[in-house]
Amino acid sequence: MFRELYEIWCRVATVHPGGSENGSVVSETQRLQSLFHQASVYPSQSQILEMIHCAREREQQQREPGPAATTATPISVESRGVDHLQTEQQQQQLQQQQQQQQRNFLTFGEFCLFANELRKCYERE
Image 1 (tube, one colour):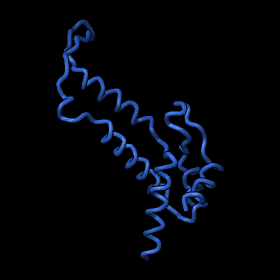
Image 2 (tube, rainbow, N blue to C red):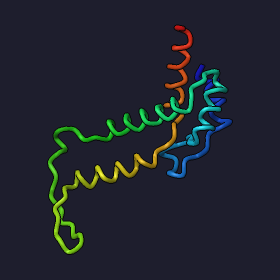
Image 3 (cartoon, rainbow, N blue to C red):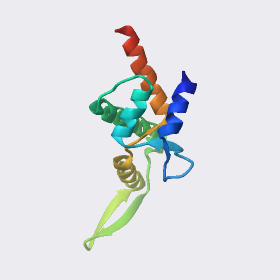
Image 4 (cartoon, one colour):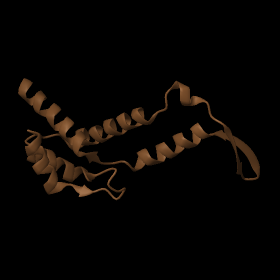
């Protein structure tokens, strides 16, 4: 099954501009929908958007620090002439939120997971 999905993936995927760390991805919802259709599963565009959202949430959960990492050193930040204190953790959260807003793709692993789950649902019906 994964070989079939990999062959389909290779026909459609593009290399992510973030470099080899992110590998190849498929980002446009219509291309994602076509990818799933080639795998003989037929999610709607809203289901695909939900898949992207779930992948983002999972990624965020993996990046969140554990309880031991919550202690942070305050950093002075000047804004409009007024000094504000922000912790390193707050700055990291802001960066993560900005990155998550830009993440609108699925990786091969995420594609395999969702395609497999959809196939299982189809078999049960």
